[in-house]
Structure formats: C-alpha cells, structure tokens
Image 1 (cartoon, rainbow, N blue to C red):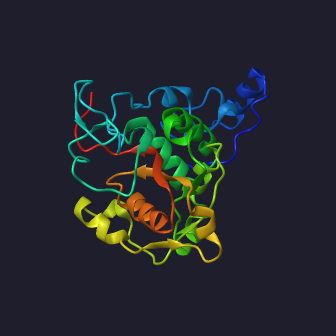
Image 2 (image 1 turned 90 degrees about the horizontal axis):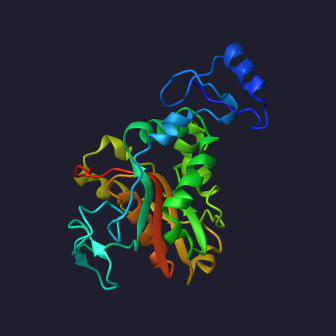
Length: 257
C-alpha cells in the first residue's frame, strides 16, 4: 500500500465517514479499512496492540529482565542482562518502545518501506515516553545515517524523521563512508564486521559540536546493536561525554512474557 499524509485531524466524524466510503483507505499495518482515516494511516487497534517494554529492563541494552530479583550489577548499581555483563560497549544505555514483532513490526515496516512518513510523529511520541530517562539528559540526538545511494532510493532517512519527533536538537553529525549490505540479510555474528569502519564524522566543524556533549543515537530498529555501537564508537572518539541510543523497536533474542 502507498501511504500519503493524513488529512487534518480537525475533520468531523462526517468527514471520516466520507473518507472511509469514498477512498476506502486501509490500515497500513493490519490492512483493515480505517474507520477514522483522519487519525493517520494506522488504526487505533494496531497502536494499542504494540508489545511495549516495561521494567525491569537491562540497565544497558534495555532488554526486559526476567524479574525484579537482584541481577548482575554494573558500576552504577543497575541490573545487567547476561549478554551485557562483561562485554564492553561504547553505548551507556539503549531504550526502545517495544518488541519488534506483530503490530510494531508492521508499523515500522509501513514507515520505513511504504513511505508512511507521518508515522514518525506517533512513533516519536511513544519513544519519548519509553525512553524518557535517556532523552531527559540529552544535549543532542544524532540519527544513524543512510548511505547516499540508499537515501536516494528510499527518498528519506527514517532515523532522521524519527529523531525530529523527539523534542531534542537534531544534529546530522555522522556519514556513511561506504555502502554496506543490509543488516537484515546477515547472520548475527557477521553484523559487527559488516559495519566496522562504515561511519565517520561529517566533514566540517562537527567535533566542536560533539565534544563534551551527551549524545543519543536514533534508529528505527536494533537487533544486535552493531550499527548503533559502530556509530557510538565514532562519537566517543570525537569527544562525546556520553552516548546512548533509542530505537522504535528492538529484537530480543530470548522469549519474553
């Protein structure tokens, strides 16, 4: 389905009825006809069906923890999951709205691949809520960049759109130094190698913008965090005081309730 910008939310119920009858738009996620097209390309049922993450969460990666029972502690006293324990990372914390599955996966797919750019605002509102602790202390948000060839093909950078909906100053400080195969097509073990040295600071006075700042990276989905960590390493090397990350969705390797 091709997406377009939704009509004004000020349309009356009568207007919604006329749109539903005349245009018969379907939800971009579940493909059921929309009863209120003026509210956007995704129905309320799909938004409500998102499996949002709730505490307890790993203090670093944001994965749900099995229980509130004491977990492996980091230097600040937060609980770490078994994957993060003993593994260094340039990222201090990561947060996401919820599990990359079901309704959220369909919504992100519509946003990223079907041109439903208006979904950035609604996703951004939910991400601001889910990642409030990370965003509250941020000086800047930095979207993960696309290579110019992929940006040209897609027409936009979904991470940039999402970053613009978070209410924090956006700085496009990073660039891709080379085109890389899609992470989606690679096994988990190959993803870090795929993006190694694939990012750099943009040319210009960006180091001065980054030095001493608390930065939050923004992307649509985190699977192994390989892309986010590669970007974070560049920002750390440029003098960032702290680098965290937020994504619309996250893949979790172990089952969650």
